[in-house]
Structure formats: C-alpha cells, structure tokens
Image 1 (cartoon, rainbow, N blue to C red):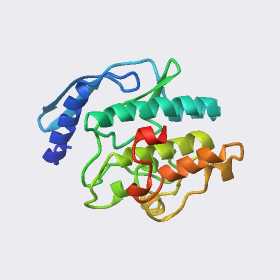
Image 2 (image 1 turned 90 degrees about the vertical axis):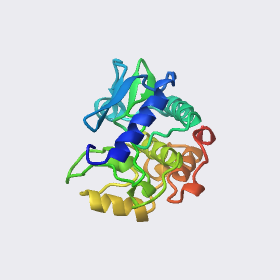
Image 3 (image 1 turned 45 degrees about the vertical axis):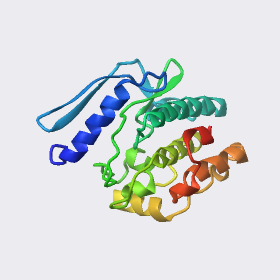
Amino acid sequence: LSDDPEYVKKLNAAGKAAHSLKHPNIASLLNAGIDNGRAWLVYEWRDAVNLRDSLTASGLPSLPDVARIARGLLLGLNALHQIGQFHGGVSATNVLISRGSPFLTDIGQARDDGAIGVRLDAGAVVGLPHFIAPEQYRDGAALTPSIDVYSTGALLYYLTTGRAPFNAGNLAALIQAILSNAPLTPDSIRPEIPIGLSHLIIACLEKNPGSRPGSPMEVL
C-alpha cells in the first residue's frame, strides 16, 4: 500500500471512524495509524473461526443458522453504514463466528478505483474475489454501500449452496463471469431453500447497484 498514499489515508480515516463504533457484530478496532506510508489496524482478539473454515469442517449450516448469521451480519453492516463507512470486502474469510454469533473484521478496505490486490490460481478455494461486487472490478467506478449488499448476497449464496455465485479457474475468467453472467438460483441447486430466500439472494446479486435492496435493513 505504500505506493498508494491516498488509499493509505482513506484506510486510516476509515479505521479511525470505526474506532468509536461498538457493536457486537463488528470487531472492535483498538488502534490505527500510518508508519512509513503503511497503514495498520489493530482489532480485538476473539476465539473464533471464519465461515469458510467452518463450512469446510462442518458442512453447510442449517437454514435457521443461516438466518442467524445473516441477521448479525446485516445489523453489523447497518451500524457501519450509519457512521458513513462501508466494508467493501465482506467474504467467507472475514466474517467470523464466536460463541455462535457472527462478527465482521477487516473494516474499510475498499478502494475507490476498485482494485483489491488479490489473485486466483487454478484450483483455488473460495476467497475474497468471489464475493466482490461487479462495480469494484470496473476501473473508475464510484463505490457505494451497495457493494456490501452484493457481498452479503454472495455470502448467503455460499452459506446456502456451498458454492460461490460464480467460479472460474483464474481471476480474469472469474471477473468476466461476475460482470456478465447470471448466477443459478440457490433453490435450483438446493431445492429445500425457500423460494423467497432464493429470490432475495439473487436480488442482492444484481449487477446494477440500483436494482439491489437499498440497505442492509431492507435485506433484513
């Protein structure tokens, strides 16, 4: 990040804004700063496991557990949006479960230019690129809190079906799919998923930000 001082400043500002936020579904930020052009954030420690590791170890959660995870995630995101921030990278690796409750880490890492600094190798497991909103992959796209609604939809898709909405063997192909393709509906993959939940997830995954639910509370 040292070669992008503007991003370092914005990340630091987001960290400081989140410092005052105390919410059970947001990891508490203990400190933030910039040293030699590099931003650093220090979060509280909790005994927890991320959702990807949880699914790998235990399989798909029950639908009531999905609802509980979704509720906590959406309440946390709403609290973040209320202070004028958005997450920008909600994924199965930065939503953690501690004592049965979900909480978010890695606050404020979205970039205005959509760059995310990730790669996907052939055979890679589901990771951050699979949950990124289409506009984050477009050069010069203005980012809004709607990217968190998209990422929430992608995460719910993963929790209910065991797969990301889009998959590919390399990052370029994955981005093209996210930008251009329509995902299969979750209920077509797992018929026991209620049709209303399936429709809600697909609504969150709309390519056009304006066609998605307007806020985390609308999803909830």
